[in-house]
Image 1 (cartoon, helix red, strand yellow):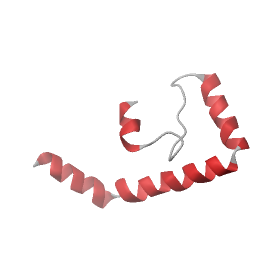
Image 2 (spheres, rainbow, N blue to C red):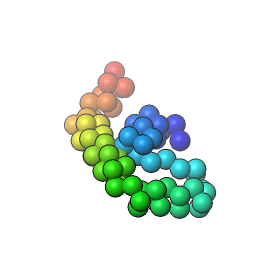
Image 3 (cartoon, rainbow, N blue to C red):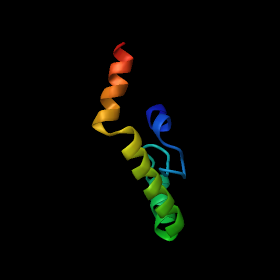
Image 4 (cartoon, helix red, strand yellow):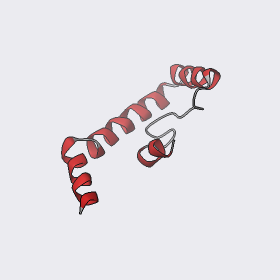
Length: 68
């Protein structure tokens, strides 16, 4: 979705797949199962996004900026 793409980058901090598509989800799971380097990259990248952009302080600051 657009919302996901605003925050995440495919294969950097998330592994995207087709929405509501069992084959696409299964392929993504298998790819992550087989590729430790990709798992580690996405894990670190996802955690960095979480720490940088989804903490309560950051979210409140964004909300205040929007309201102004």
